[in-house]
Image (cartoon, one colour):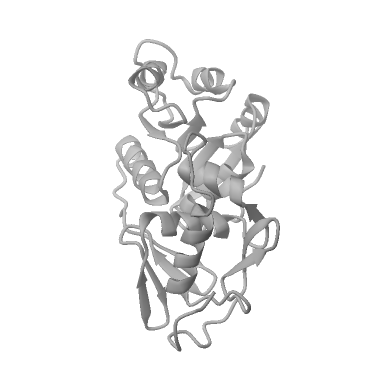
Length: 254
């Protein structure tokens, strides 16, 4: 699977992702693929091997719960006895217990992140482990463009023209998740699973409440959406093209 689009910077780091959930892959790509990393993704060891035959990554993000995770770590040179990979590895896992993390480190990962994760933490950890491996000093305060709005990922600020909006961590994660599948429907179940996790016992309207809060801050009306559209009976869709006309004219109403 190819990335959504490669960064303009010629010195962007290359990142290989092993994960079999396309929604998670899309979120990782959107977070990393803005001049800092060129991302390629594989859903199996065979796909990863094909990519590695012609493309050497600066880092690899591995779903440690994937059946092929150990084999890929061995392919990268991170096998057994706390030996770190030639290519630095960020492990992802849904199981955040100490035993799981110690096993991942024993297999050779350089860092591990529990799913669900925040976009800012994923980006910061990815920059740090590649910086250690390459000696390249890179900032951890990028600004990412989503259409006509800019997101300061570290400070959780959205800028549109002269307006600056402050988001909560969940609101930023929601914005990123929807934007990573721009133009496509993301169901409530997918949002719950990706942002809150499969073990989270949610209130029936928790997704809708946070979407509403995000819409109010973005001044995104329900009947005439500029950023986030509701797809009745299905979920929500990020509008890939929109206008800033009317920004600051008033608070959106549901």
